[in-house]
Length: 292
Image (tube, rainbow, N blue to C red):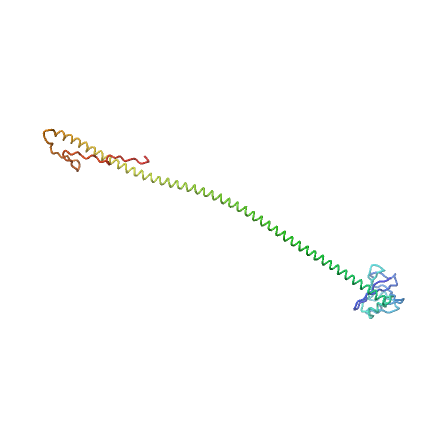
């Protein structure tokens, strides 16, 4: 039965040791009696401060805090860890704790080195795969981000179009409402203007009617005056006709008529002279106004 032992110095090396007393070994136990055999001999770590591998002794069960520690899950694969700076070089320790030739140890180490190199290559390959996966994920993330930006731009464009359409509809409604209000106000203004024109025309007609009434009154006064003058003239004419008749009666054949002078008003009429006929203005009637 074998397990792994770790020697702590620089460089750190690991080797395999053979443990002989199976009944006393417990994985994870700190103070366990351990016998390590190399080619039929026994080696031990005999003090707590230094690590020195010697022959022909048994490791005590209680040897201090720097004792051998057993690590593992079972008795067949137990890792023995020796604490402290060893006084024996790691390669010598390997030769002591193994019942193998140095060439076998070198071959084993070469095999382990190859295995480690293979592990490193596999790890590098896994790292490359992880890198490729990361790059693919990053590219996918970039594509997703670009897609999200495109979707956001498309959504913003549609939103802007919807807003523009709504604004256009509201503007059309507002313009229609303003046009209807303008038409209503214009019709109302036309009605008011018609009412104003009618009132103005009515006022003008009233003023003209008043003026015509005034003119009619003046004409009536003039007509009354003319009628009065006409009556006076008619009286004068009657008097003249009467005087003329008397004059004609006096002037019978057999002599000249007497020299008679008839005075009418301020003007005189010569004997035998006919009076002037009345003027046309005195007998002309004044036409009535259009309102009569």
